[in-house]
Image (cartoon, rainbow, N blue to C red):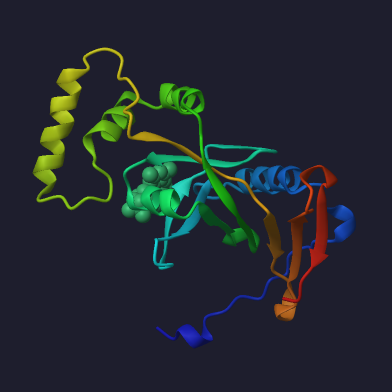
Length: 213
Ligand SMILES: Cc1cc2nc3c(=O)[nH]c(=O)nc-3n(C[C@H](O)[C@H](O)[C@H](O)COP(=O)(O)O)c2cc1C
């Protein structure tokens, strides 16, 4: 495999200042809808990066489960590695890669824990199987065998024959962006990069900058 020769020319339409929305959330909705319309596989999959107490980064995919002018929400185990990172250093970065459209979106900002009511709301729409999985897996801890995980799943299934309550160790995080960048691939590596920066005082809205590709 010759990775050095592996490249695509991006012939898609560009991204102009005049065409983007006044705030990054509206612009994100437009691009997410385009990703859905293009039937991109798991269009709400995003890479979330965090750092541990010593500044060492780790990235992993999660699913975006909510977005509005407050931020970008995902759900996970509060005792997982990512959650201990966030407890130590509540800062995160997100990347969406909609590669078939030659697009990426990069987001960064402080991360807040969602309140219980918001986590309960999303827990309620998960399937029973996912709910049981949320109890059964001590996410990110070392597991001696897969059998042990399956045994724990069966045990939880019996413990909650009806409604499965949300575990105290499970819930959501919200990345509250100070920066959101929209990247559109263009020919000859002359890509468009439009970056929204939150103004110092929140009610002053967003500044829009064009960055060199
Ligand atoms: C497409 C995709 C979506 C995922 N969505 C989630 C998610 O929404 N929440 C979650 O906790 N893990 C999700 N995972 C698993 C994570 O990538 C990761 O393995 C897990 O959260 C443990 O991460 P940590 O040890 O860094 O905390 C997803 C994985 C993939 C590939």
